[in-house]
Image (tube, rainbow, N blue to C red; front, side, top):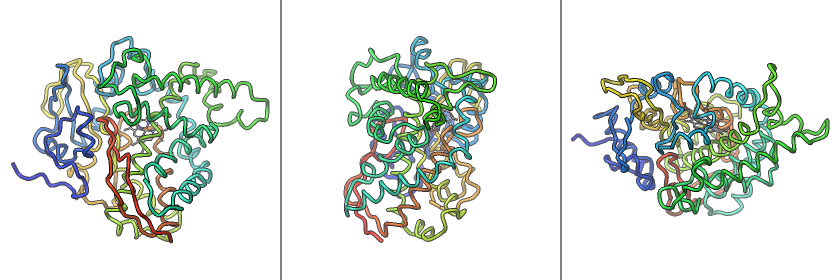
Length: 431
Ligand code: HEM
């Protein structure tokens, strides 16, 4: 077999990683395996230890097609590898586990507060948070940049947008970690594949943190309803979510709780690990980033750089669909009921779409990466927020910090769903 040629910056060089294994991802995103699969078996059946299995979809074009064809590939039976009973699926259903037109209705209700324009109104607040956190971290010459910077920001930034108190940020981070980090013992005592989590099977991510998030969301909704006329709470993002739309239809209480939990799960770790990956790239390829230093904040180069960082880091490894009919994909016959799983980071390094894909090119254009999904109704709702968070952080970082180097072992999250660096000790010099 010809050697698998991937970037020296991706440490997981095993071309035969078991994609279902949480442990496999502690060595980093398995890019060598993705590359081999794109070349040898771009749509292939993967067995799971419980006797079931799924079709893994590795090529850019096919990932877009599966996302687009929601009639043939439903989200209703779950979007992760985990199998759920119909009862569990129903109780845990969020926006992500719906198809149009049910999805369209709910998405319309919540997307009004995540548009590019609305998010841009919060840039100053988000920038001030970035300044505060970076200034605090760089008082030391050495620190863990994931813990002291990347972990601090996304939840507080999302909180600033939604209108939750900044002081609740740490608690929400913990809850979000327990959900998305449900396979990593560092983040939860209820590790899904190691202890019995049956008691929580009706909650998001089979996690007890779901109860706390539901309670928190309920309190936040009550505070909006009880706030006196003229109180800023009456017009913040949560208040807007609870407002009836023009046709008189508000989110139900359960819909709001589910959506709140979804935002905390979807908007916290994903952005944190994208930031961590960005710092790793900066450590390994500093010259690429130097070219940005000193450019005005609204320069196009920052926007292009952010897109390339997103392509390069692609932290959400997969989303799953289920075939609703017998169909065919790249010559493979998919049967009704089969699980079909798309691997976004694999699509992001498909050389049929991205020339020289293993080169981090901060000026790359076009750059229609798959990091937020593409082509389908579920494209990431928080994409504009996440982009702004990353761009603002890198700008404020480069204003203050001259050099950054790795100062200890990096550690990766134990999860086959989100891949990211959870610890990254660094040494810096200030400007
Ligand atoms: C860099 C950070 C992020 C990444 C990599 C990411 C990635 C994704 C991906 C891959 C999807 C599924 C796309 C599809 O099925 O076609 C998604 C959906 C979603 N994301 Fe993000 N996301 C990020 C940040 C955020 C943030 C900050 C929020 C905060 C609100 C958020 C909220 C959501 C929601 C609510 C959905 C479900 C949308 C739907 O089903 O209609 N995400 N995200």
